[in-house]
Length: 108
Image 1 (cartoon, rainbow, N blue to C red):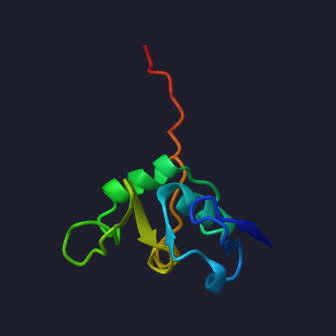
Image 2 (image 1 turned 180 degrees about the vertical axis):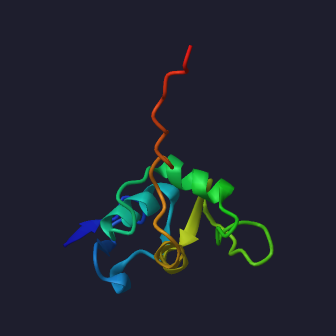
Image 3 (image 1 turned 180 degrees about the horizontal axis):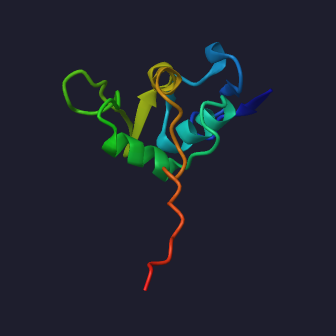
């Protein structure tokens, strides 16, 4: 199944075939793609930005050994193949972390 890309114009984007994916994704389109590719159960663009800020192994940025973000106007974009590979290699990311422990009443 294909759908028009909201970011890259009339190009077709496939939900299953890597060769039909756009060359670059934004945090918004990247979050959608991760869900479509079933690499995460759910994630928001802000959740993806949080991973980018906090994960030591995030592949994009200004540091050595990181790929530079490609700028499209004021929007940071990432190479789709490298972006997907990051999520395919590591543990599944996303969610709200560990569930809180149940509260216990203190003895009085």
